[in-house]
Length: 114
Length: 116
Image (tube, rainbow over all chains, first blue to last red; front, side, top):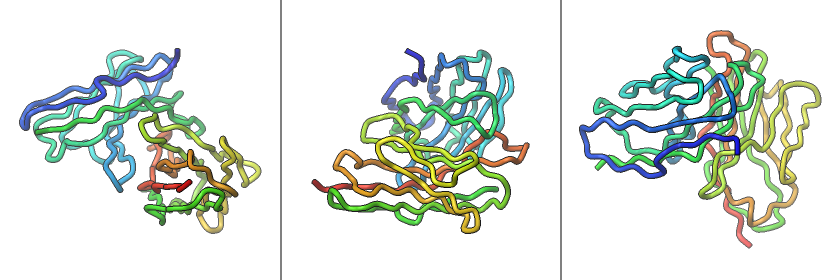
């Protein structure tokens, strides 16, 4: 089946620890995105990448880092510098960064920092 | 930057009632418009999209939306809702500016609850 997988579904970490969220897609999409979803705030863009080895900051990039070494993979690291990391994180992908392309979403990872 | 407003944060309806969810955006140039839905425990999925042409677009599950350029609006409608329409609905917009090509701007979402 083609799609986007995110793992794990639930993640718990202690305050001060870095944590990496996985996102893999087999849709052959060029562009990938990370969003954060908080109740009543919609989806806010953290980082996006339109091509391997290149990525851009979104609206709330502080405290996060990404890499794009492979077309299929776009892992997100939530660092200890992120002041309020507990949230639901969504990964998405689309064909090359054209405005005509819809984004497809993964199932999300719910991160809780204790 | 583009901003997207969804005026209704939580809408509660009885089955068979009609639905209209508002969405307004700020950018005055060429836009593409989307409505996504998130059913409880499921992936965010596309309901419908507008790129060009007929401003009245039809999507899945009987939903439709109308693009009114002069009002910067893209309201979602359904004539008769069902209990299974209970979900969170997000309006999203992208535009033709090269520096942000491909990225979507989302509204804050509207939680729809339908009582049987």
